[in-house]
Each structure stands twice: as structure tokens, then as C-alpha cells.
Length: 112
Image (cartoon, rainbow, N blue to C red; front, side, top):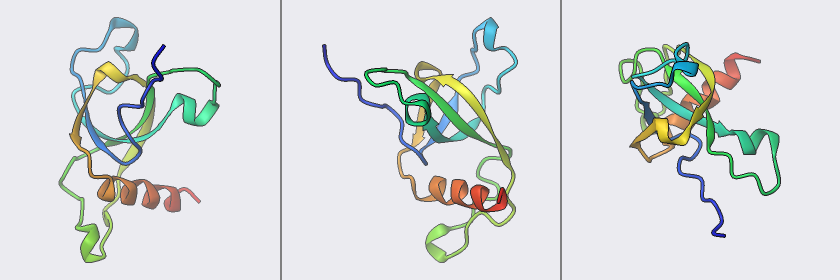
């Protein structure tokens, strides 16, 4: 049996589908987010091939992201975490993790 390869990586920007199953109707949908981690990364599971993700929902995508390379990271920070989305409910928008990791780091600092 082939080994599962995680489709999305921490810090990547993704889009959540607008077609959520009825048991997930209360979840955020049709919006952009940053990948935080997978279920397996947090809880382990040995040979578990869980394809579930925790996401950092961007409240107003692209409106407050400041150029990280210029030394400014997401000054007017707003967002929140939601778990667990299935891999097939997500679409990659940007594989570059630079901005996403900066957003997650800033959020972690604000939570201390």
C-alpha cells in the first residue's frame, strides 16, 4: 500500500469549498485560510493517514497582508482557527509559505 503524502503544508494559502456536507454546515466555507496543521501532526496516530486539517481563517483575505520581505508582517491582524476540514474540501491558492507562516507566527505571539 502506497504511503500517504500530505497534500497541503503549514503556511500554504488555501480556499475552502462552498459545498460543505450537512454535518459541517456550521463550518466556515467559501473563504480563504492558511493551513495550520494536520490531525496527525497534532495527535499522531502511527500509520494513520488522516487527511484532516486545522485552518486559520482569514477574516478579510489579502486586505491586510503586508509584504513580509519588506520586513512588515500582517500589521492589522485578525483571524481565527477552525478544525477539522477534509482534504477534498480545500483547494491550493498559493504554495509559497512565507506570508502564511508569518501570519501564524504573529498569531502565536499575540496569544502569549
